[in-house]
Length: 141
Image (cartoon, rainbow, N blue to C red):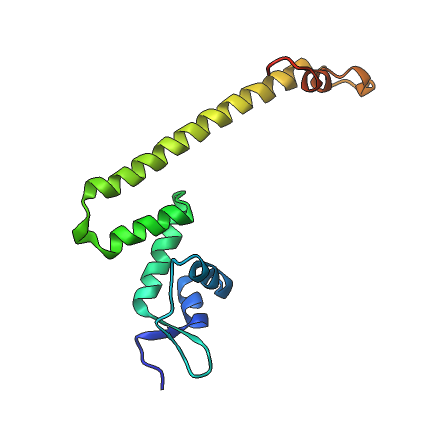
């Protein structure tokens, strides 16, 4: 008989709303480890692994990479050894990265808009299409 505090991989996946493959992937990345294996070879997880899995999913939703999530999990595992300042530093780094990406996307959008505006968009042949000419040139976009 199974202890109520343990879950097989399929049960954990169902309760956490993820696939078994997702759990295996996180296990391979070192983010999640089964408590033990049954005699039949099934991975057995603790209820705390469900909470850990939900933590991983929430951290992914706000943009943390798996490596960054690993760092956050380490902080969570030993909170007494760390400060809120250390944890907050991780979010500030992510904010900085996102801001940089947003700036890059805005630059790309402006370049695309200039390309789009430069083209007449008419039914004539693309032999002299300004978009193709601009992309083929060595001039900065």
